[in-house]
Image (cartoon, rainbow, N blue to C red; front, side):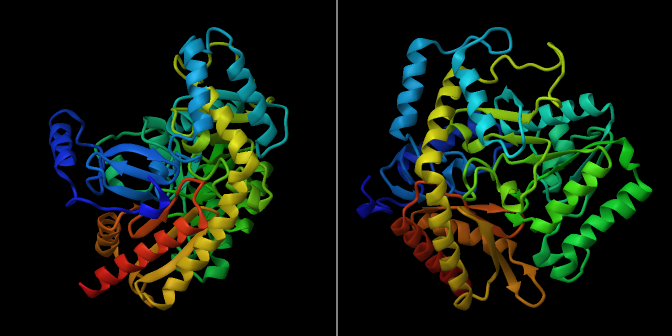
Length: 445
């Protein structure tokens, strides 16, 4: 899979082998899965993937921001194989193994809050959030939680109660966790309070204090405020620094834990270990998953040791902190530290500049935003009214697929670029070229 042949589409899409697998999938796999286009993975290397019919694609999804070090990075594969040859499982909640301890030590070195730290190991992002919710309630002896509209924190019942991205994700599952409340998130491109961009962040926090704390739940009954420094599923919306800074003040003044959900935005993706670091804010708890282990299932909740002081048996996980996943995470952290975080910053800036340059050519682009290699391009039918171009967004995603570029939507009308952090400048230019062609195809149709 040489870069000289990326992308390379050899068959109609989907090809015959892909069609056969998709037909089998329809008979035995849950229909709740969302598939934007018929890509059937066969193998991958770096930011390049190949389907079962031999078609080669440039991957700007990284399996939803998971394959941080690229597909099958040799250092990660070696760590996985070496650990698998020693032992596959021993349950870190009942026994000890050094690889989990070493990962805890590494996470303490990079955590965006002062130590000493403790970490709880789970299997996924939603489990990491569930851990944070239980921990916050246990530590504060309070029962209410605050999240934000547009948030995505997971799909298990507790985290789903905080999720407020799409009605479909919550529909049919009520009643959800009691005591979960939502406040407006500062999407300054389209302020939820219909205010000016320069006042959006302040007004959203005023709403939290005046309306939520003033009319719905007293601040001294709130255990935690859970926030994404950059909303992922909500549309790659970047919270202004002043919003996070003042939110930190509000939570500290009221004895509320600040939990930052870095499941998608963490692990070097924004050019820092965690997106919250761009604001200088120190949370009380941070949740992480996705890119932490380059594709092995792992979720982590890290908190100050004084906060994570619950007794044995208060929370546990049979498979959480699996030794193979921990080994993959240690290799991933080393690679990110040595080069990939800086690459995310540099290539991300190049890609952001290129995406913004496309605004001059394509009036359908309403906004380009993000940090590092976490970039969102919001499509609109009219820049003045900001009418959402949802159907057009879906068509652009498919046009990219047809041309050999994998991207995904986020929110109702945004396209997300979340490639592996190994993406090169040439690959970024290829992605931008295909994106340009796909926008043109949709605009002309």
